[in-house]
Image (cartoon, rainbow, N blue to C red; front, side):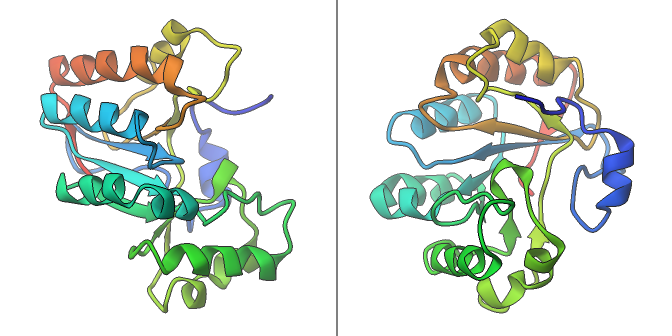
Length: 208
């Protein structure tokens, strides 16, 4: 499995219409969590965030919102931002555009947000240019990331997951974790320690 832990500058330049980071706002970072809500993992994440007065952005899968509406409401009640992560966690490179956009629209019936993150970070120009109708006419903001924790990777240690984050954080970084059962063994270790590190370094965690 190949992925960039730190998104290279050349990739950001090629796909400059997507949001990779938000420089120029002082010592601020943006924690994001994909694939929830999850009945055990998402409450753990929110507890850690509360303990450090941190806000985050949760890119939710529509079918999980349907399954756990009370957890979804807790995310919103906690002051966090939400985003659309499709209904079925589809891969845009392996799915027809019409089917993919219909899946985004189905998620939009449940997730009222103009923020969109494509699963696996994979999207096509055609899909990107046609997101607005699928998202109820809102002007979409496609949010990628500057730092990938790789908590989804079962081959790395929890310690390596933490290092992936703290070695690559910069002011304005958008950092991706996952509130999923698969990621939890690494998330459970790395997230609390990341939050302690950010506080010690004087960073503020905001939502997008």
